[in-house]
Amino acid sequence: MTATSSTPRSSRPASGQGRPTSQGSRPAQSRSGQSGSSQQRSGKPRTGQQSSGSAPRAGGGGDTRRRSTTADRGESRSPQGTDFAPLVAVVQTGPVITSFVELGVPAPLIAVLAAQGISSAFPIQSATLPDSLAGRDVLGRGRTGSGKTIAFALPLVAGLTASGRRVRPGHPRALVLLPTRELATQVHETIAPLAKAAGLTTTTIFGGVSQRAQVAAMRAGIDIVVACPGRLEDLVTQRHVRLDDVEITVLDEADHMADLGFLPGVKRLLDRTPVDGQRLLFSATLDNGVDVLVKRYLVNPVTHSVDSDASTEPDMEHFVFTVEVSDKQAVIQELASGQGRSLLFTRTKHSARKLAQQLTSAGVPAVDLQGNLAQNARERNLDAFRSGSVRVLVATDIAARGIHVDDVALVVHVDPPAEHKSYLHRSGRTARAGAAGVVVTIATDAQRADVATLTRKAGIKPTAARVRPGAPQIAELTGPRAEYVTPVKVPAAAPTPARSGRSPRPRRR
Image (cartoon, rainbow, N blue to C red):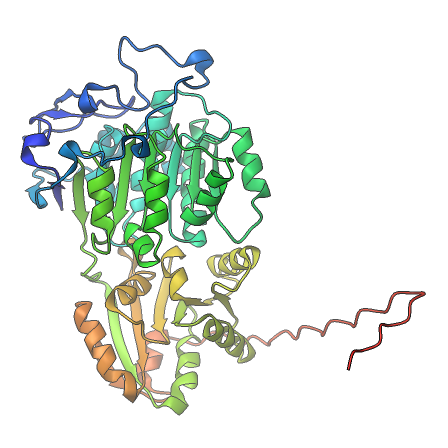
């Protein structure tokens, strides 16, 4: 576990100095391990915190002045605004703190976590919370499933609570940006109980559903918005949302947003947020333009790196099963027939839908998660998988990072992914938070060379075997088969009767 700084040495705060602390959090630690005095960014009060001589917002309802945004400045927020020194690792010494009390988390939020059975911090939380609770910009680097959501949810809620500002209609106080609807929904489910305990309001904003409810929520006033960039930009353009009151901004899965081409929209949204706001960015890697976001929008960021994305969980087993094309469907069905939860990945939406139907028809209830589904169908299928009423979920790559379900025992790459990062992201749906898991890649003879290259780039040394239906290697992974479930036939829809009093319209030739 390391902490690094990405700004030039000349522009960093002196040792022992950090940003002002939030109420209920401990002061930022200096590199020598001693508590430092608070320091304002560029001599100005921190967003959400007031200097001794500053006047409170009129009526507690927000400043009458418009706060300066990044777009107003027309330049980087970074000190000196230009070159950055390479990341220099500073190893944190001393024991790792896992107590939320010692990390400075406010008691009401600790109570919410305890009610959910969460009593100690994961490494990414232990690493980032001291700095994020102190108001510093943080870059958290860690694999999917490492506990990043709670790592940014706690300082998000604690910071807004400490500032005590009232929300204005259409002006959220905090913004969380994510790449997919599924991920936004699940992150919101984590933040909502914490926010409720602090008396804060939350909502989600993403496409695929009517914007009417989202607009109504913003008019009522929302403290924390969890959003996907596309729909949020639409609402900003329509003047339903303004971002000039945002005190804290979080970018989660920044590298995946880059992969999906969302970075231009993300930049436009960040340019509308105040320059003195706190920014927390979480990403597995810093490639594909993510480093540009760090340089442009984070000031004196502390980088905490926990679990490199290129490494694999020690309790995750990887297998490559080579099959004949004619045997592939039967092998997939046997892999999905176990009693545990299984997650199968295909490359296309059509393949995901077709495979789910084929498995269900074969007595293995399955649902699909892919882009052609309406949002309510997505949520219904994911809820069925979460609850255990359906044990098999067939998904496309676009949904890979939006699935957070505990106890997924098996991940199957039905179609090998195009590149190694997708392999790691797909595989990360199992062996989460220290649990064990198995990953199987199905390859035909024509795909063997590509799969070998893929696993080598991913740093994986899988166990390889050629299998046929009924092979003992399959039974060893799946264990006892689940009971056969008779498919339910959906009755065909009755034809719509012709309207009374009217003859049917003649067919055109």
